Image (cartoon, rainbow, N blue to C red; front, side, top):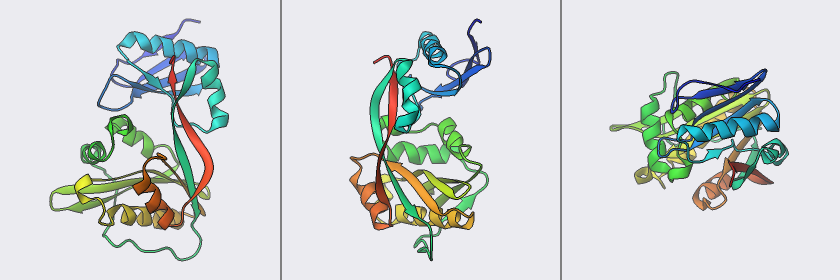
Length: 237
């Protein structure tokens, strides 16, 4: 069967052949890179779908952050490790500490405001687009966007999700000029309280190993390194 690409880049596109499906969106708003997601299909389909994207003025194509067991099909398709993230976890049993800053839950996030905070908080490769932020919210059956607002607008936010008895801190970011004042800790604590309220018994998050400020904050709040690393792979390099 012939490969079909539905959509017009840089809007999200779907690549399909028969029952096989993959989707791609811009990695973020800062460069011509793509985030690829394999919905179903073989490594041969993934390789062909990835090659088809290279004709769309895309520089590099990256996988999601994957557990090692999930990287095999990507490696067979020609992807190689680009970077990795440490996985941390804690139990959500007992009484959790309340946040020291007022944290709001919003049902209608202002994606542009969240993207502004995200852009300021992260280096270029790790920034997320509004599409990526929205995708993080949809990654679990239940999710919430938590934020801290001040006079000039949103200064920090978190995206948290839960599935069965597990929860996932998908994202947390604070404006650099407001860092070091406990806002990140407040967002983390509010996320844990939200997850506990949804019946979650554990929370999992990932963090760049070199981000010691974030790692120290998570450790202070009871998270421990699991010894597992998620891998982000890049096509053809």
